[in-house]
Image: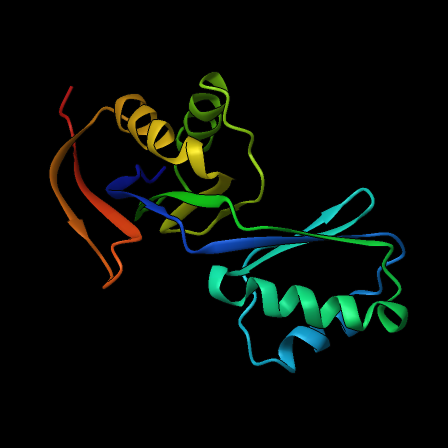
Length: 171
């Protein structure tokens, strides 16, 4: 079994979540977004429809475009939430280390973070949550994963993304 090597904990406030409910036919919905040349983030099936993310700056445009195409797309309701953040752990072996996901989820649930859209790759485990939960989530994950902060730096010009470089503490 490969053990995960953690590189960082990140939080970003650059996403918007759009939820469409009702009888949604997914391919035309995705085509309408693609025609805007806007990249789509995580996509999740909901009991009553679909939820997905786009960049916060594109959220209003995507929502307005979909709303105007509502009769053709067949959804009943659209909601735009611009007050979300992404919290992520990066490293290597994150999917192959069976301990990382439960620690990630248990830690966030313990402090009351509602796990919106979650995604996992070999080098990234992330979740969307309410904006106000991003800083407490980052702190809780740092403690739960037994890592120490070695540096803090903005990762973009607007300082909306923060990267915390981490080293795993030796036991």
